[in-house]
Amino acid sequence: MIYLYIKYFFALIGSVIAAIFLFDKKRTVLKVNKLSGKQKEFAKKYGKKVNIIVRILCSILLITVVPLRVIPLTIDLPYVFTGKFQKVKVVTLTNSGGNDNLVRQRDVKIKELYDNKEYIVHLFHTAIKENEEIYIRILPFSKYGVVLEE
Image (cartoon, rainbow, N blue to C red; front, side, top):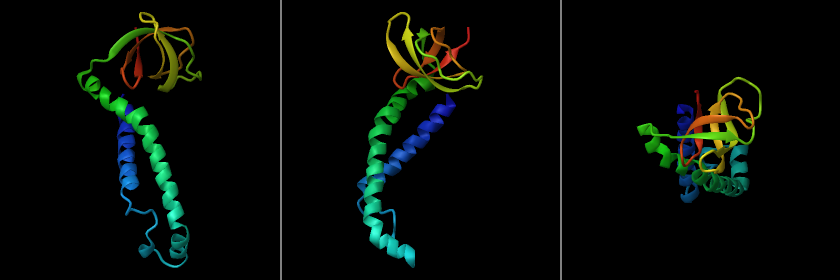
């Protein structure tokens, strides 16, 4: 699970940098006074267009990454620090794609046996087969989990 929070850290840093660039109108990608020759001409000619494109990309990053990754992982931090994960018995509705024995993140559609809830979980495990009953330890908001060995 530490790998997950390393990705979270970089997503958070990237979101902060994107927000600073997006909301600070004085910041530019190409600084004309620090360039010389053809680079300076390019910056004068295309500088505004490059800044607009970068601002659009930053806004897309903020619109997608913050609500889908940063906020759920931030809400899950108390569960990680206290070690109180949600433990559930599930049946897999899809396979994880691949037959390798490497432990990596795999997106699997599951169904809880007790509540009959269906959702996609990001599991860290080797290959998982369809219709397999497993116990998982899951973070409730971000839906990241680990398969528990019986």
